[in-house]
Image 1 (cartoon, rainbow, N blue to C red):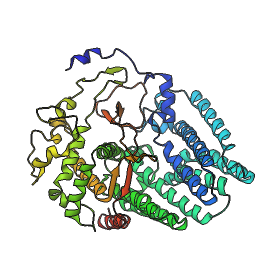
Image 2: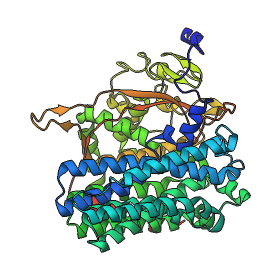
Image 3: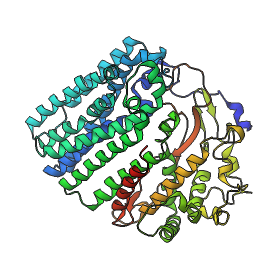
Image 4: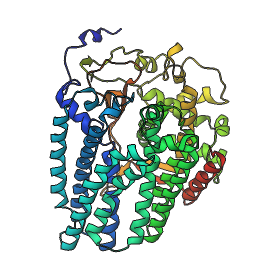
Length: 529
């Protein structure tokens, strides 16, 4: 163990996990921001952007309205979470994943939660008076009434639907999508209602899709506790049913693109990108594994590492494109059968896993200090950056694995990151092969379909390389934590991820959208259950 570990417990985080402030923070889910809030924000943002395009709204007004809905979606999501926990506090005590929620474990009192809820409702009420294009008095009035209906009816009823029906996700879809008609009507009034209705229904299908996946985490506990959900209702048919909802959502996006003359970029990025996500999730997700239903949302960290690396190393992307085009041609996406010939994609995958190792800087975990260089379970950073195994270890170089991967064999080599990235011995991740194959398919499919590059300065054209900056952290796989509970080893991880950065992701060719749309149809037909 490093000498640095002797300084453990020297300092504490700004907000202690057992403090009242942390209890109220987790009550609103703000400790996971923007997760949750952004799902409420997107429908409102869609309404603002599509309506602004239709009526020619000035850019300044678009920015103001978008900001209002961004703040409003956060406050409304906070209020909904508080109300949900108030209503479900008895259920939560009987469900493994939610028994540590603030109200369920007593970290926040019922009176305190109610007062906190009232404050959020007052803030939402105030924001509703500001929404709407100031040139339309009627839009202001309509926005206010429609918004109040969502706040005081849809949001209030949702937690209770889990007692009455197996379709609470459908009601949640109405509540989560309600900012779409609010923003739409506030700017352009009661026009183009057919397009609004189609997009609204598609967004509801999207909510049913992702919240059913989320609910699969608790399926066994929900049955015992008597909680109803689509995850329980769909049972063994969850995959084909969710594939249908995904197809309906995708169809709504196609219709909206056609109705608004959105153009090929909309088809290639919005439609094809959504289709890619649906195909990958339906192909890889194990609905009987509660951990997988949460982990499916965390692969974005590994992908962000890939995008960051490719922005700094365009030669890697060019080389990957050459191999993909040679092996696949132009008319299909990669499969696992292609893996022996796509050895350079394996090189990239291994280098991303090696290059993005956890714990490279000082960090805090609960009441502990974790100084840079600390030995935590296994010092993978030191192993995967050993100059004896990996010359110039801080550089991203997928070529370091190229000679070893050509003619891929099943033998594990001493310098192979798979020896270390997924753990050791009996505690090695049992899903290593699943994770490996899933990441390979995602990496290969993205590289086959898209170009990834830094943004260029609008004036000089100079490429703006994203900074190689990372955020470290100790985090819990469970959505909520922070009550005064013992630290259990399994759900806690020490990790890092790139700080938010911007890059340019564009389709490699015009046929990309059709290729991905064909893949989702093929996936649904080939994997009906």
